[in-house]
Image (tube, rainbow, N blue to C red; front, top):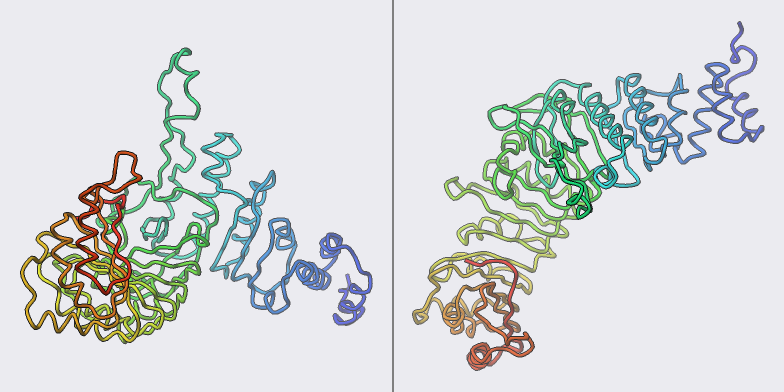
Length: 491
């Protein structure tokens, strides 16, 4: 049988098909005629839904779920490398999962898969407990397993801001849909129940000894991004990286402290190998809880994420404190740094202090005024807001000449927030605050009711009024002095 290309050149057929002005759905039927028509019709069909010729040539396709049949019909398109399917949901979502799995099986070069859903799949199941929703979650685990099996190595999962390890086989054993066994409930008691009980869904991850453990790091599924990373250094040579809800992944915890699940997160050598391959477009807050990530890798990661506005540093006290970033960076959006120990303030400011938007510095100190940290803060070139957490015991002695000179050099500090555990701690800081030449606003905060209010919380208690009067008298150049309770425990 003669090929269409033997009758007319491909370019002529392209013009003919274009002149027919067929509806896009008819192009899929015409694509089944021969290889030449397949190539031309699939390209025109995808172009009609926003996929450019350049994207198609690069094997990078972003489509809605209704366009998936085109990829199943395609026989001559360039190798598919990245597939993004939007708007998954409705009655056809399970069928579309099957289509995506078929596409995976026929696309050996596919290294990135992104799925965006119309709704939270976990919430939908927990709200309805419909069998169809359960089947959907089971199929989703099968899809993640198929994609993560395309490459050797472990699976690294990001959820709730932390990174965990597992294997493709572990994913098959996830029970995202498991409602557990419901205890016996009498008919008389059942009328008082308004929601299903006994839900016991879990994921399986690996701890630091490679033992499987059941946890609940996955609380919602609005989107999934799965990426094969073929060449790494250090602990593993390749891996699959899965991110849940990347569009709302605002926080990232690096290290094995900071959250309840952090003890099971991946190690610093693994982070050093993986960070160059991670991109989180919505990332705003980075919490660094280790000192053993390569400084150059961490600096590059921060610069590749211009949306970051907050950087927190809280490493274990027993670890050495080498350079945090190398070289130092000027991050375009970084506005706030939070340091657990005042001894680390110098290292953090040496790393990110040139960032043009930096204006808030928060740290804790337990004894005397942290001179080294304050001397480094005095070098900041712009107005700065300082947040101090006073730990017991706060300073109560008279200021010496060196401390007065240091305070007077802090011309950059215009606002200070003081978290304190007692009125005496707050009072003890007043002489030092009075020496800050440009200070305009001071706020004292406590979670233990030291700044008490009346029974109806309309009028301040007499002790609070007395402290405010003393503070305003002791800080005559400060325009605003406030006290406020906060809903966390200080100390």
